Image (cartoon, rainbow, N blue to C red):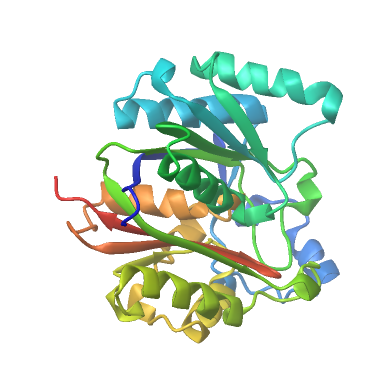
Length: 305
């Protein structure tokens, strides 16, 4: 018995409203030295940084509304809201108001909600897998997935693997025909490597690829474009080539244009490539992200419109 089809629609994002060149970031060279990162902007693909004075809630509402508009869906028809964030503000005493502010801002007052945070910059793809499971099981028909993040300590905008931007992104997962069919999703982890001192593992990527390609009955060479995280260009290219992708399958333009917007990168890249007319009907597009010890992948097939 085949599983019911699940679809993804309306991918949208918002970036921090203050865009500046990386050279305008205070003490960037000194910070690189502290981290042991060679100050080599061209090698890493440093370009622009997007900062925001908006709250996480405001960014989430803006991205979520854009997604609902793009998907042509009334907020009242959304069954569940999956909120993803690297670090939800406050604690149990403030999380209720956090959810209320976002739900009221979106118009999803009666919608079930769930929060995802432990997967770090793979949170959005973890949330997508949850939404996919909800819909496939018949628990919910329409699930809005939103990720929202911003740097809270400006001196930490540069990490050893990325230059961070603030922003949010959203997608709608449903049981009705959408822009993309979710063909397969997969995850892999290695507990001993979860600490940030470890590197991103191409072995975990290969394990995820094996699961995805088996379920989709295609070869990795049939993936049109990989929508990966916008971390340092030299790192992402090396790791994804080691995972079995070709250079032609990678999309690195947004590393300099956008920076690393936490978990939102795969959706940012999907949205931009779609807007540029670079996605073909029936083409396969892989949303993927890695952090030390974790890899997620969601394989999409673009529907014929």
